[in-house]
Each structure stands twice: as structure tokens, then as C-alpha cells.
Amino acid sequence: MDDVVDYLLSGDPAIRWQVLQDLTDASPDDVAAERARVATEGWGARLLSEQGPDGQWDGGTYRPGWVDESRPFFDAWTATHFSLQSLAEYGLDPASPQAQHALALVRDNVRWEYNGELYFQGEAEPCINGIALTTGAYFAQEAAPIARTVLATQHHDGGWNCWDDDAAAPGSFHSTICALEGLRAWESRAGATDEMTAARLRGEEFLLERGLFRRKSTGEIPDLRITLTSSPVRWFYDILRALEYFRLARLERDERCAEAVELLRAKRLDNGLFRLENNHEGPTLFDLEGEHDGFPSRWVTLRALRVLRWWDAP
Image (tube, rainbow, N blue to C red; front, side, top):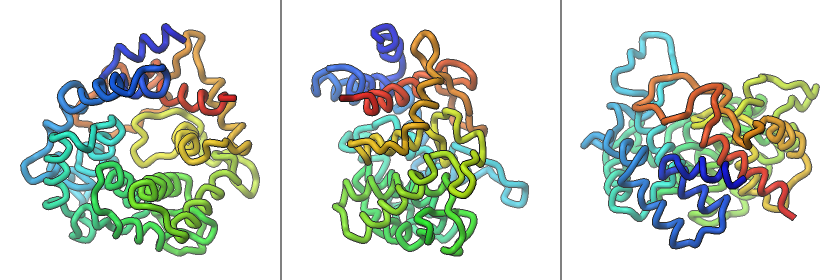
């Protein structure tokens, strides 16, 4: 384990501070000092430098400004929405001057292509709103309108679905995890309400009663890609993302996660690392060093080890 930790600590500050916090006995002061580097070094500083004076990344909110909307849709990760998600995943300190500056530009200037609303007012799709709500909560922004929209778009089965606004239609894994992450983060930021807690618990049951990766009706795996590890997660669902969520939401552990945990555990290599198995294709502003499909990944290893540490704790 020491060799694995040493390898992780040789990576970017965005990874190092989380390793110190989650996998070692480092002091809070040491963790905070390493976290502060995210704003000035490595991926965090590089991503902050890509923001335009209008608050946008790559000229757009959900999609970059250069996209031709008349052509077939494809995923792109360079615009404002996913850049903010990455900054939160890197752990950029919300109180840092760099974060304060960047978020003020977004808050006051950036509007959704879909409805023209300011970014922290939200748009319509649950998966998009869930990520924006997580970001808003993380960076202490006033995102209550997004929370209300997420609550209003929950389906009868407890899930959410970006592709069907009929509440009687089945929810999807992808939309549900985004909405759940947003609601949990917003509860932590703004305080829980009975309505929000009830919605979150119903959403958690949607995943748990499916064992995190199976159809409720047949027990089949609907898409093998949700059993593969990915990072960054973007809007996609997989078992590692779900287990990371329940690591935070269900400290006491729920046995319905057990099969997914063992599936994750079996992916561990002889050297203690975990591979990046499913890279989500699309343009990026820059490559993350050492994070390539099929190769050991510091991000995946960090996230998998803290899941196993949670699950295996006495």
C-alpha cells in the first residue's frame, strides 16, 4: 500500500491533497497546504487559465462556441459546464481568490444556451442540472432554483431521465446519479428539507434496488459500460461513481452495494493500482498526464481505494 500511495503522491496537486486526506494520516494543515496548490499549479491552474473574460470556457456554456448545432450531436468537454465540474473534482478551494474570481464571472455573465437563464438558475435536463447543482453547492453559489427544478423532474420510480419528461417513464442510471449528487451536495450546503430528503432517498432506492448496475425487472446488466471504471465521469454513470456517492451518503453501508464493491475489487491489479477502463471520448482543453484508456490511472486508483477503505472499515 505504501508504494501505491507514493505513486499517487507523485501526481498532480488535485490528486495529492485527496490522497493525503483520504488514504493517509496526514494532518489537516498538510492537507490544506497541498490543496492550496490546486489554484496555482497543475491541472487546476491550467484550467483556470482557460477561462475567458466573459466567464466562459471555450466560448460556450454546455457546448463550446465553435460547435455547429446543425450537424450530428457529439460530446465535448471544453465548455463552462464541464470545466466547472472538473474544478470541483480537483478540489479547488472555494475560498481561494482564484475560485472567487472565476465563479463571480460565471455567476454574473454565463447563460444557458437552452433557455437564456443565468448559469446558477439552471436549465431543463436533470443530468445537466444535477451537475450544475453540485457545482453550485461546492462553490457556495445561490443555486436554489436548480434544486427546485431537480425536485420537480423526478420520476415516479424514484429516478430521473434526461430523455423522457414523462414522470411515469422509467428513470435512467445516468440522470439519476447526477441528480442525486446535486441534491446531496445542496442539502449539505443549504440544509435539508423534508421534500428534498424524501426525493434523495427515493433516488437512492432506485439505484440500490437495482444493485447499482442491474435491471430491476430481469437482473440483467443493461450496458456493460456501467461496470467499467471511468474518470472524469462527466455525465456518465458507472459503478465506481455510484459507490463514491454511497461512500458519502451511506456511511453505515448498504449490503445491496456488495456485488458492485466486489466487482470493483476484482479490478485491482497485482501492483495495487486500477486501470482507466472507459475513457469518455470528446474534445478536451488538455490531457491529464498518465490518464489513458487501458492503463493504470491515479484518479481511478484514488477513488477505488477510498471506496474499499469505506467498505472494509470495521
